[in-house]
Image 1 (spheres, rainbow, N blue to C red):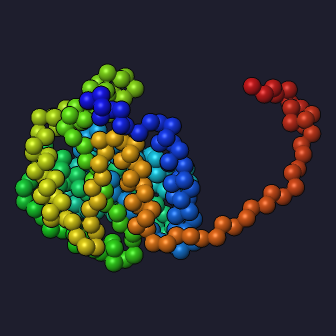
Image 2 (cartoon, helix red, strand yellow; image 1 turned 180 degrees about the vertical axis):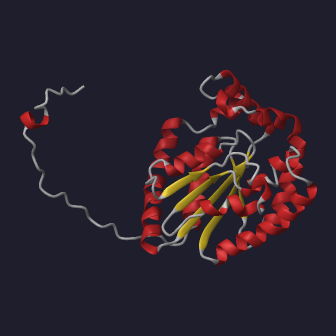
Length: 259
């Protein structure tokens, strides 16, 4: 185990490798605004795989008005009566936008199926409809990427223990997460069925090794950047106008003191 840990990517090296990717992500954002293209990224995986971390790494240096993270709570009673994909449609990107789904409609093929939150008939209907739904998105011009973050069971257990022992991470442990530990095999079977049914030419799955989360983030972001069409757009130079000056006595004339 020590040998394996010694091969983990250090924080300094990780940040050094991440920096040029962040610049290129900003190039992509500028290209999207210039062309009006829409980018949709689904990030799926087992609990503790690292979905939130890689989404944060992508979104951190982008304009939050252009790049949105969607992590929906459990459906309401009303939403449960709707067409399954309906609650996700309002969150799809408009022209120039990036939307990152931290879990998506694939909840139905994973946690909902394994935990008994939907019927087997509903699961089978989803597996048939998902490729059709995604084909409609792609045909309409949305750039759709689907990533599954893989993590070994021993690494997952290590991260569960870390969350339990860290009061700042304990909020990440939900009752569903704890039950998931008992159903590791069921989740594996559900994942295989999901990948087999929904891996298509127009919306393929990409599996990324996230046993080392830092390496996984770099690998996924690099793949995303390499797969997006050519996205070079000349940067418009920005020139500051002359600086206006406000007299100090005017700024604090009411007796206000700066902190």
